[in-house]
Image 1 (cartoon, helix red, strand yellow):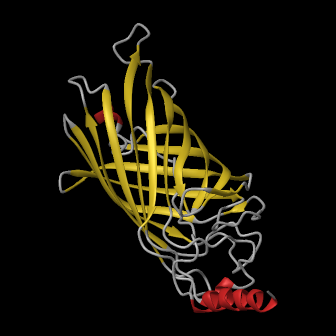
Image 2 (cartoon, helix red, strand yellow):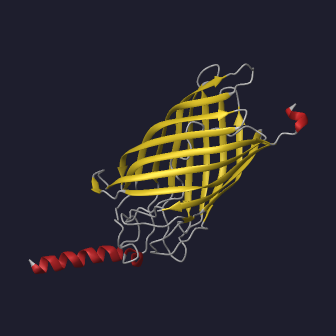
Image 3 (cartoon, helix red, strand yellow):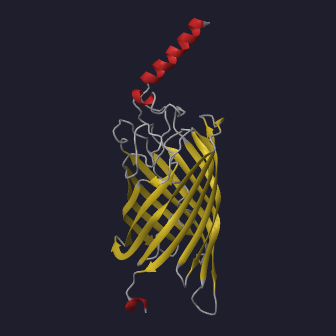
Length: 326
């Protein structure tokens, strides 16, 4: 019996030492749930939006390759910050050019399947989208963009208080919003985002590529207060997201030992699905936007599963000249 136990331990160690890929589920930069009903649309031309996002994620379980619960981490992540989004009147290939930036602060930023990870509130990784094109027709909107996640947050290999993921990430996006009725009050949207990651700082660790799909089916209502111009625009409906790891993480054998001792390594690629609800209102006089999304995850494989809440508070500025506005 003793020899069999020793042999089992040696076998496990040899597997760890020889493993090069596929035995970790490292997270990407994209925050699922950050976009919903208007996923495939660009904001109106000649506007600048200043926004404050509030992102909450509650991980209630950790699922294995069979979708079975293997841990109950009771793990919570919170991210907020200040963002800005600009859409110009400049036309490129018939589309309006836009750009955006997000300066985030995070608490308990998820690095991987670490059930004991905790970190204090600190500045995280900067998101910059220097290039976005948006097309609008009577029946549909189309967007295409390139963005990058810059590793500005604190990151130390194996550290317990990391606020960032320690890697530069390229993100390519394309999507559409389809108007399903003549008035355009009912719409369905989808946005496809593809992340390509570089190595983490000071390591040969490289998370696999990730595909995320987000959107929703919604309806728009207009309220009037004695004027032809709506006093508010309300939009509500069902939203969804799904995410798939499309290539294995690259994790050299030495990285498996000690630095991630609290992590659970799961072979294969991870994925998750989610469905929820969204409601938002734009007050046209004050140009204030308030939005709330809730998602319930299901059918997770090799990753956390839980609930996502996303609150948006924004002010929309018009950048059109006074003469043109008149």
